[in-house]
Amino acid sequence: MVLIMTIVVGGLLLWVVFLGLYHPRSGADVLDWRPTRSPELEAQNEIDDMDQMLEAANERRRARGEAELTEAELESRVLEDRREQHARRQAYLAEQADESEAAVRADVEQMLERVNAGRRRRGERELTADEYRAQIESGSG
Image (cartoon, rainbow, N blue to C red; front, top):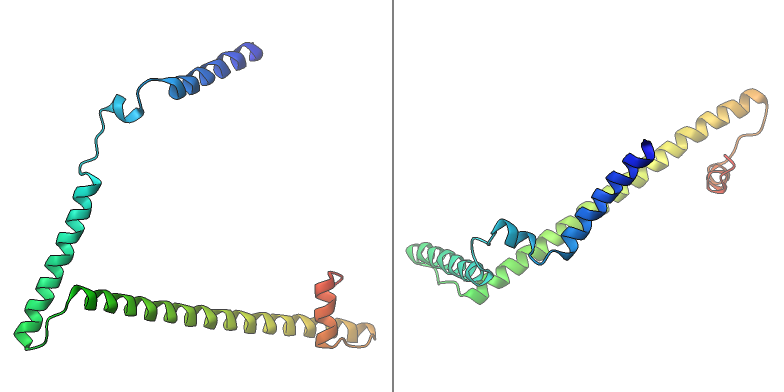
């Protein structure tokens, strides 16, 4: 019975896979799915949005008596903002790495102190930090 059920379920699974692979229509055709907007329309909407934002910014600048922004100036400002953001991110990651290294050093020092306390109780000589790190790296500690 188990063998028969396995064959039936496997056969159904293979039939569904082959039906999906070799059916003449795509899933979008079967569901009659169409994108709501074409990629060209989406690109045009982005351009229009950029023009509207630039015009609004220039309107505020004119009201304050400042010079208008061009699209090139706006793009250069965006690039500069992205550079600053990237620099801040790199500084943050470097700071996190430094903090992580300091935490690891503190952990190693705590473990070394516990190991040396046990060695003192057994009458063995204490390990130095370098010896203990080498022992950890070799996997024998």
